[in-house]
View 1: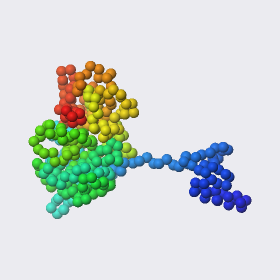
View 2: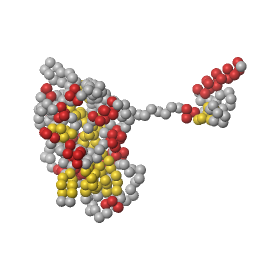
View 3: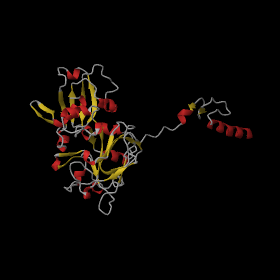
View 4: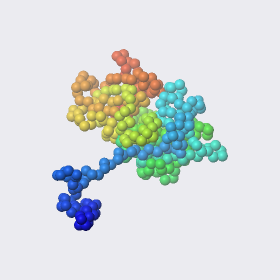
Length: 368
């Protein structure tokens, strides 16, 4: 009896080191309760918990996490309408599009200036740290690219009073790391101190060939911001991302993009692969069924014109099409009516055709 106790104790110790026990089990195996039932040691390990996206609210205001109403954290425009600080066609009676959310300050100094620190919403790489307030309507702003996420979205933090000294392009920052201080900097207009805020965006970058498109359009000014110019960044509503995180279910950004409702479905007879697809490969929904002789694309756009899902097409669906031809296949009129600040489609002789904003996105994606 004493021998069995010693053997059992020794066996447990040996098993902990990855060795067999007294009964002659093979190293790395553990005998199951039934005769002849051998379970590999690897099978006994618990599966790793699903990865969670670490998403941090970019200001100290925790009202959203507590489920409080939007007026507790959203800064409205001079209209006083809270919705004017939200994402979408929320300004000028729905005719003006706002590509992010405006977050109000909790702290002010004696002069009434905002004091709230601004922090990174996710771990990411600093791609743009613009300290020249007058160079952009964003004022002083920072853009991070979140290369560890899929898709590798950007986040943008605008109207800063100051950008933190350590925030330099190319530096990797942790989620929650300081970016600067909330303010009211802007280029070409003035934000009064009582409406100081953080303009915050989450979205996708349209093209690596932005400078060529910018030069072709002849804006008459130098592009000081490279690929991270606001005209090359397309935001989506940030609040669903935070809502998913608040509910404990944000394990992948892809899930959110794949669940976004489609406002316009278009087909484009262009065989070349835009760099957008190489940058965001998970948005290509038939990537596991490669099209050998691709001659075009089917692209799903959300209500603000972001290309959220792609499908490569061979000759059959585009038979008889001219190269470069674009056709609108489906529209969601309800979604489009809710976002009148973007012209994605307009009436043509034979049905809907691309509107000016959709044409612009397609020009950027395919190079004209």
